[in-house]
Image (cartoon, rainbow, N blue to C red):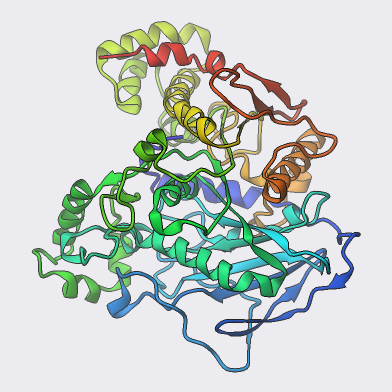
Length: 527
């Protein structure tokens, strides 16, 4: 789904609350493996020693690129320096520079290009395992790979896989396109180049962990999914992955001229104006860059790394064709409605302010807002904030629904919607439903939050989480969405737009997305 408002302090604070509440206990040891996985592995930069958990093996904090500091700030990632002896890989690397948010406390540490490798504790002797590389969300402004614990994914019946979670540069460090920095090396896409460097690391090294470099699925949520669409369109990503999972993130990028204009204004605000500002910018303290958010932080197209708009490339057939599992949440924009109007003791949306809230939130005209009010009247909802959430969400998800058809025309595509009406959520003045990112605890052990979720989720929610993990990892293994004993998600096409709705009361295969979200209305809403 398209995020029109950048999530700043209120968003990341809310997501920190959500992360704190969610944690999933790891499962048991795989019964069909026959060889114990070693805790020390040799890779191209040296030996690393990980740790063993209950059913998994974890190598934390492996550098996949050199620290992007000094003259390497705002340049493509470079290979890491080799190390002698055995490097301990039992502590996650620092989060990339960011304000306090979903990745944990504030970070000013530019030495952050690390990844983490999760494998089953035992490995088959006759085959290599498929690999999922996870790109975290956070609006390209916050987050880290280490907050996503993969034990629940690999320690279950369809979990015969390896999971790699990745840090990449964020905010101005990862997406600044100031003209002074346009040196012909993918200006503005340093974070995307980091992701690609991590994928190349997987190609070179994952076999040492028992993985198959020819069976890689790249997966991500929100900004991570936006990045995947960009990677599908980036020529230099060819061959680095064979399938994709995209959660709640569209094909979205900004054109280089607009990105450069915003970047030049940002550089001037930081005391580095003009075409010769590169040295000045690279000398700025990291803390100053963290305190000056870049708006927007997004992929940039029109450079040598990403020549074409990813959305246009997808529509025209110019992006790579790979099997795709793609979806969104039933109440995506409840998160942003909560930020504005749902925090207890904060401002709430009054009925009289509903028309203007539609105009400002949905970026529509007053005349269009009048039509939306007739379609979503306050009398049909318990609270104005719920009416806004429904209209805002439907506008967003219908606007992105064409991408499902674009994927479906070119490759096997499986569509889902997460529809838990009451997931664990922060304190709110209105029911949030299946808000943005609320599906993540059904997939990962958000380990940095602590072990609370098992006591908070209902039995039906725990069952749904187990099922979703099987779908995700079965797709990683076979590039299909038909785990044994569960409903097979049919391949999506515009003539039979069937998808799975993940619900605690029982998931269903349906074709009701357009009707449920009133997409005919939104497609006809013109100025």
